[in-house]
Amino acid sequence: MQTSERQRYYSPEEYLELEEAADYKSEYIDGKMVSMTGGTTNHNQIALNFGTELNFAFKQQDYRIFMLDVRLWIPKKRIFTYPDVMIVVGEPEYYNNRSDTITNPQVIIEVLSKSTKGYDREEKFEAYRTITTFQEYILIDQTRIHIEQFSKTANKQWSLREYDEEDEAIALSSVSVQMSILDVYNKVKFEPLDSNDN
Image 1 (cartoon, rainbow, N blue to C red):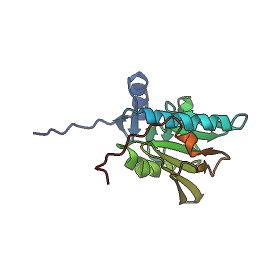
Image 2: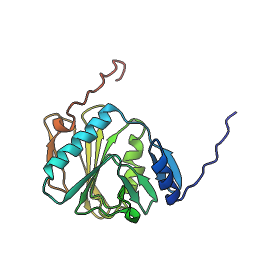
Image 3: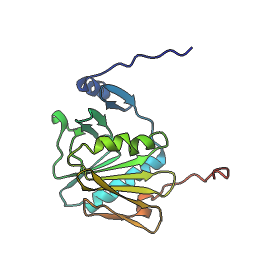
Image 4: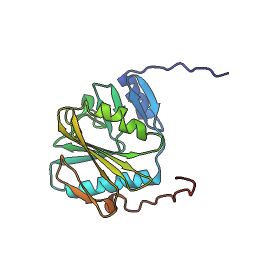
């Protein structure tokens, strides 16, 4: 017989206190704590590649790159989450003066996992769109060459561009930077497709 476990609700302050002491990361979604799944080497490599390219491109420019361990607070949805890479224009704005949690990304990059890609494309993107500074969303597949670039064109309007060729380059629309798809996927090893996958 299946028993239902009662969901406990936490305040943002309780979550942050627990998160500081935890051995693993959790997201906070309107009172609920949700454990994050472990990453893969491909996931890590792609996030590192993208962040490194950005950091080099923005040398001496007024942009900041944050990765992996820096949290994002989305006040309108009451969510704390950990995007793979974020770009902030100018100075970061912090949640309650906490230097580990920002509120003003302009660009967010997520490397898709099998278990979370639906959430990243739908509910998470919807939450990100409530952030006033947010202008661009990059979703990178870790199992094949495929990148989706969502760019804000007007209030409540977004355009989509896809990349799936090795010889292409991705140009961000809200900040002045371009990188080759091969650099994004540098040192990434794709698993061979199963012959039964059609």
